[in-house]
Amino acid sequence: MLPYSVLDLAPVPEGKTVADALHNTIDLARHAETWGYHRLWLAEHHNIASVASAATSVLIGQVAAATKTIRVGAGGIMLPNHAPLVVAEQFGTLATLFPGRIDLGLGRAPGTDGLTMRALRRSMASGDSFPQDVAELQGYFADETPESGVRAIPGQGTHVPLWILGSSLYGAQFAAHFGLPYAFASHFAPAALGEALDTYRAGFRPSAQLSRPHAMMAINVFAGESDEEGRYLMTSMQQAFANLHRGMPMPIPKPVERIEDHVDPALLRGVAQALAVSAIGSPATVRRELSAFIEAYRPDEVILTGQIHDHGKRLRSFEIAAEAMDAIGRKAPAA
View 1 (cartoon, helix red, strand yellow):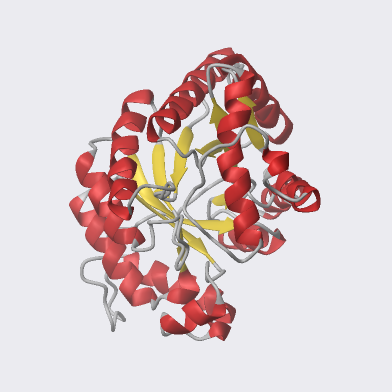
View 2 (tube, helix red, strand yellow):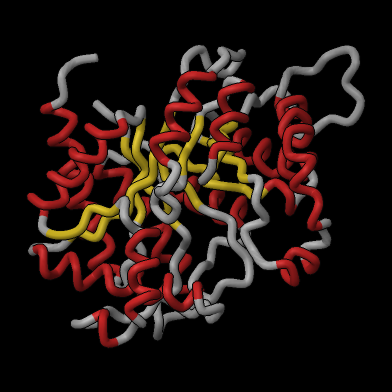
């Protein structure tokens, strides 16, 4: 069976509160666990009105405490925003409380604008230290050695699994060189997906963490009882992307009947390109489109996401997606 997971940003719907969004994420996690999802990852973003997962490690702890078996992690922590020791202590604490269930995906971008970056008290140039920061993190999670100076307590000896996130060839090359699992952000930046996966697989060097390449691709899902409902639900995400491109991030808008009446055609074409890796429509259509993506790119794992305004509709979309992935897994030939 191909593992399938959830990527969540604790979306804040128009007309709802941040508290609603956080409770909805915990509710989604409980359902996802019963539907067979392997992981639920939360993404770090700052100063965006539609995203409530800024304090990512705190929310991971709440989700892990509310569930029993599903892996919970960051997809990801934006490492330029943080001192590696602090990240190690946070995720070492999580791994100690929830052993065998915590993942740490790492991104090289700040995940925010320059003004917010400065408010985080980190230098805009700190992305240049990404390789050193990753190596430092690995050291904090490793077993104690006689040379250990500064230690992460909790953290030391927890061996929290690291993932490298990316939307370009840099992350693919980095993950391959250091022998780490790789997750590609094809849900919003699909242009380099095929080349990135090829680069990662061709250049992979085994490591203590991973003996063979393991690539995950992200796919948007907007599933309803009909193709029309799926397209209708997707209009919330289309509007949200358009607002972000206009520099006006807002809570997740309510869906609309005709997206063409709400977004400029040129901008809408750009949004369509960004969201090209999406399965949209009825259960049968979503299953067919998911199957086509998997057949084309042969990921080792998929992570599904979808910002839908109505929480009940969002739950149903992820339920349909899980049913589709189960059916695809049963149909797939043995490896």
